[in-house]
Image (cartoon, rainbow, N blue to C red; front, side):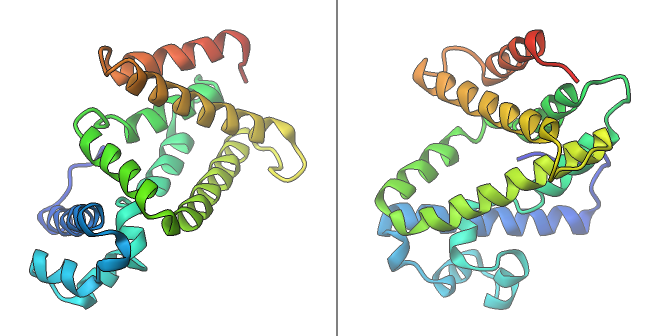
Length: 201
């Protein structure tokens, strides 16, 4: 998981450590038992925090399993808007999303475990798809904001956001299919470089 460019204070580091612990325990329990057999109380008991603390970080148990870092969308938005003006919108997207995926190779076990949980607990899929849809709409909105265009009536923001998402998915799939013989970041950069050759803004 990524961190913001500004160094985090002790309080923020502790909060993130608690959130990460809750998400990790929830995911491992879901993998072992099935999400239907996991409770928030079991997760908080294992971490040693209160149920109230759990709900300070996650709206529900399912979010802890499928959306371990709720701040990611906010950081991505800020990074796109703060990217240097000389970068195209596509380049700004590549840099912003790349920052969020900087530790994917360290977190590949969590990513694979989450995939396994989704296969065995299909009840999680509707919520995950709804959250992904919200993230995609947020990405369209921030591209439109950077370009000064209307996300509802202008094709360009939607097109740029969706091709960026496709590049991420293609890079991730190839990385896994290749047995991770190459670094994810090298494949990721290649994907966006290929896009940039034919699509700039």
